[in-house]
Length: 285
Image 1 (cartoon, rainbow, N blue to C red):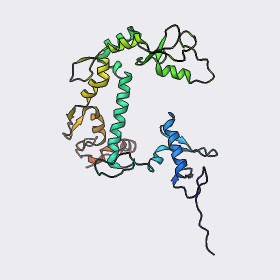
Image 2 (cartoon, rainbow, N blue to C red):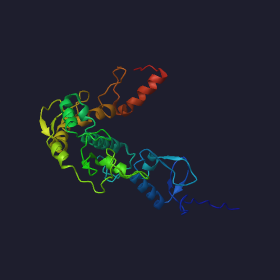
Image 3 (cartoon, one colour):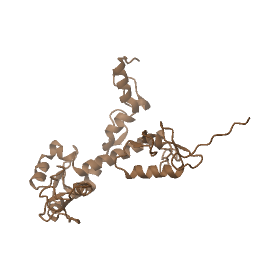
Image 4 (cartoon, rainbow, N blue to C red):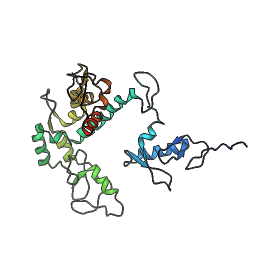
């Protein structure tokens, strides 16, 4: 007797021969259903590391790293000039750097890091004195808007957070009056923000610049100056010194001072340290 060949079906639309496996739940999806998952993931702010399997009867969580193997980078690898998957070892470092840069400047623009620096006490005091701190999230009100007829100001993020809460009266969090449906920007705050003086936190720079020039030009130029790595003598952007040291500096030595170079294995230095500490293994030459 001839065995009947079993064919797979998309777990969502039942299309034949799906090629995308979601992970531990072993559900397969066709190309169209897989694209829909990616679209939903990109649009969802909650989907940072895991998403729920789209099959209603399945309660498994899907690790987003499982989906990366089906994707390719939008640009060819600069090193090998070939289309690369997200798991390509040659592209990983560049991707880490870009993510680090985006995260770093995002924090910088919100002043979460800058205001708390020891060198920025005067700036911190001035921002508080001028009432440029959002009364809701207690962060620097970079995009201040007037939210009610009383003229109260909060940041734009907090305004939309209040507007998007269902079944809650849309009221000013300060005076409880009705929120304006089209809140105007605060001219008062914008003028004050544009005239804020900021000391560059770069140790090698003593300049004091206005806020707009600082966030748009000055600090990026300061941080992207290349300085020499003490271990391997490669010139690296100042912004990425820590990433360089912890991930791929070929001159870094074993953290247990055995003089052995870690080389390309330096990218897993943290993991090595944890394993050694947990198992009490002594580092040997």
